[in-house]
Length: 135
Image (cartoon, rainbow, N blue to C red; front, top):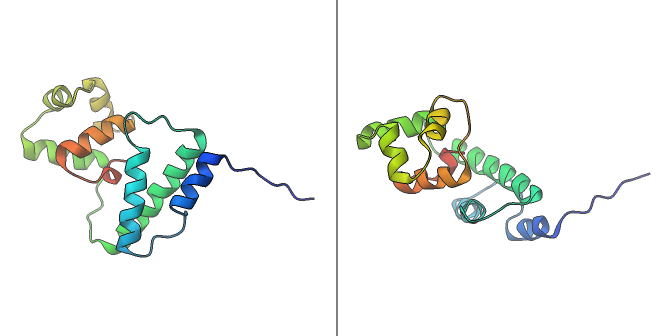
């Protein structure tokens, strides 16, 4: 006996927009990043299926970038710390500038919590980096 699973409409729409297959070119990478940006908008509330899609899409983007771009492996926390240092900002100043709780930023930088998508987007936009580096 086989079981058929029904995929939610919003998930099927995302699959049609960008199928969850290995990314094989720069143009497909750009398309994947655009979908990811749309899903990580601060005003966007994701369903469980959209969150699952985003998690897999982010993994595909990371996989492509790790194969095609020479990068030192840095954690999101290390990246933010270097960017803060280069900009001459401490946690308090960055949190105030971005309008985020300093305690949340501190917990993230000490590896005790992940960034919310809203805060990740604020940091990515502030430092002009790809949000995938923070997710």
